[in-house]
Image (cartoon, rainbow, N blue to C red; front, side, top):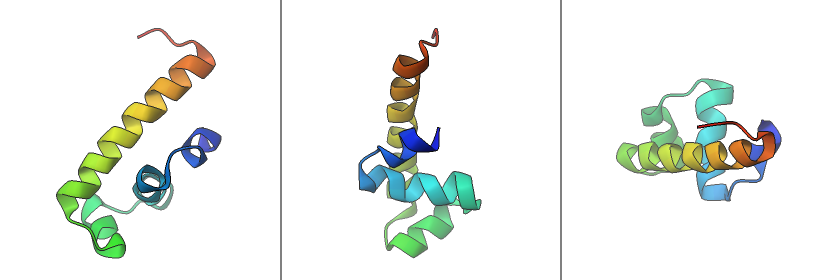
Length: 63
């Protein structure tokens, strides 16, 4: 799983890692990265979608 996270482009990886691995909230990540909270939430959503596609292909999960 973390190999798939590391393979994400940095703009998606940067918020995903602290959100899931460190337990930070979207608001905390926004402050750390100097971005709006809504931007961080969008990046998390898009990053999760990319991970879902990557993992679905790698493990042949059904939808």
